Length: 320
Length: 320
Image (cartoon, rainbow over all chains, first blue to last red; front, top):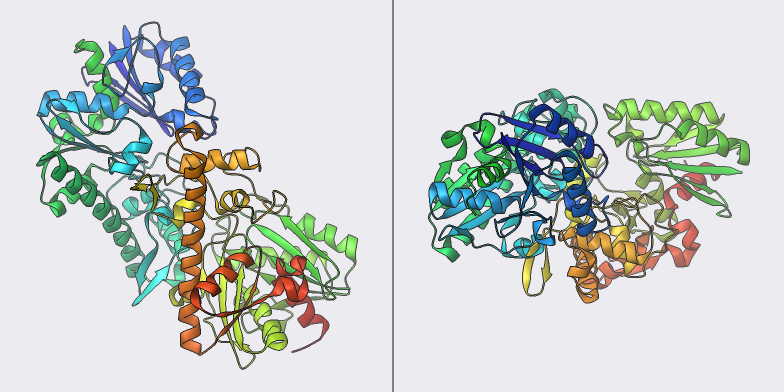
């Protein structure tokens, strides 16, 4: 078995190169030191011949800089596995985890998307961020660092689960007013999409902001706090409206970035994956772009771990 | 001695009615259960004849709703002190902590500001939030709940210390681009104002987002993470520019809200206090409004605990 491993700040994801096996481990690197143990456990359970590794977790603020993060992750990987390939921002596997391996899980995805779908915009909305990668002549044409991608609209730091609503919105329309909102971490996009029925309680795999349940009642209570209210100060319509407005804000941001990328690179089709694939689909409809669903092509389980799957495929097929 | 106590979500503040003594205890209610002990310690050290209590901490998301928060706070107060007055949103002391005592520390301040300064806009930028209270005919003319005040621009949920930069801004101008920013809790307004020299490391009394130091070097590192960068990916000018943009965004929001309030109530003068008094002063200059500094009138120590001081004064002078 060839395994792909995508080590993010919040989640470590696995996929086998044949797509038959996937795993998602919620493992927040900024507060946990369990990565070495989790990787050793994966190694002992699966005994892979080789692993393809991509990472974004080096940005976690428990590391003083990205080099420290890369070294920590590489050490944990190499203590667990013998045959390791790192896939960096060029999409090429290497034996060593170089600086160019930082924040490059999108590069593996773009290589595979280019091979399987041809030129397109590859978009991946995960728990925390959204990658928007122009794939031109089979290669990723985006900038190579997070900073440059943020500047170019190729990275939107908002996802379908962990994003603080205070970071997504300034105000909500409520009873005819543009109501300001709290800046605390009172509710996240996971609460919005749980309440609107887009994700399950099982998919909501991070902690809730208040430590309480992953049921829709608790999500309503968290959404009410965003406008400093108890749940009984708002109607259910108010709460659904707040959730819908958060969703529309996220879809609009995404549609704008996809349109910009499509115009710049003369691309008309988006290949979308991730826990927030539904957001990409809605953004494409809004932006008038074609949409190909990775869930439909490969199944939902692969869609939510696509960079790991791509890393496994790249290593297994030696397409480098 | 008559003591005023302002029990917020993040800080519990004290002032004596003669203004000779003040204390600030960083005591985040959402993760600490130390309030009863801290209040008993205050009682044993000061042995006040009476206490005037105002609160905002009932919104902490460790409480399922505000009533639970009010009861928790009131129980802690009454176990520590014998002669207790709660000042509610009407500005009137009462023996019982009623629902109207929720989120009403501004009410005590407005009563005192009205007596000492006449009709004005009373503005208090604390660590976490900003109250903008029209004082008309000596009484607060604002809405009575946080939800209504958010709708009317009388509460801006941004302060001089704890506000996540991701909640304050969408993008920063960087090297000619409108650069998107991370939605993580990577840096707070305390980092901005520490770096710009507006607050001291001592005034930065909450935890840093990454748990590291309260020096300007660490603040720079946190600001760099806001655009997903290591410190060496940005120049010092870039970092100062990010901090200045955060400040200008906060000042602009404040100026807009003050202008709206001034126009609505035909008020021309702002009385400003709090850790972020400097922001109110700049916002008044921007909005063309007169500014009276509570720091200059009563001293800096009173300015940063003004609601507690006002509560103490109200109880000591029985001005009800």
